[in-house]
Image (cartoon, rainbow, N blue to C red):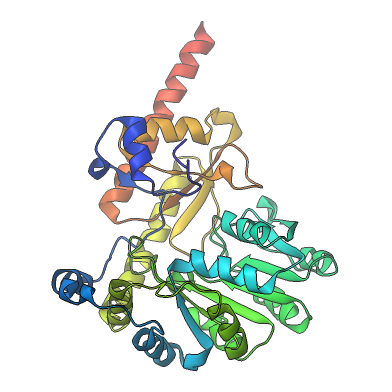
Length: 369
């Protein structure tokens, strides 16, 4: 199984499974921005090694100040972490929910973090009938059973934002809310959808952001969270000292200034998302409309293809896709793919076409026999 460690992007396991070097794979299983990393990252890695003899700033002051200016949020409301994963874990440990409402399907680390803190899970089902969009009545049904909601906004693997009416209802309730906005940078007009500013003054809300996806630096590990200053101080007390290394701090501070990179990334996605969606649909696949940089789709039942068959066949062609059936709430025909550059996306479509034609031919021969 390529997702041996619970995530996509595991090129080491792919190398073992398909017998080709890591560098020869096109990775659609990991949702990184293919436009990046920004060019400044190369300069920092080349020239910044001299300063690695020094400890990093334990308060991450320069990056926090830059984030404060970018999002117009008080510095004391910001905590930087070793990727969003660390912040998810710290948040659950501090809030210690008894029962947490989690949408299904969604990112598995929400549940893992809650279980580690000793809490239970209340499942909120997302339905393909509604294109996996969270429904207000399902939140209302869960409200009396939980003391915390942990939601992806946008959600992974569905790519859907939480509807504004649902978020407004949650904010009017007395329930605590954690929003994972790891992919919010990819959403057009993100400032209209993000709850970052509200989180900075709210005792009820925590928002977690990733910097690895949009800036394509997953190997660096970098994320930040926004909450009321009192909550930030409480969470910071549990954070390991020097959690954010020197290179991560320098890179994070520098990339926030690259407005040309932001613009080119959004232009790329504006062109590629509708193109790839249309190409997948023309192959007969059932694609979920996405608000971000990845697409969830399924093979129709009549094709007789499931995701594990597709993952194996495409992997042999050097193409890696995410087995979305591993997300609770999705059946065995669901795949998730990142949207990449046009040349890469064309290779994916060609690989899918080749695979489907071969399966159809083999099934036709079996029927003749």
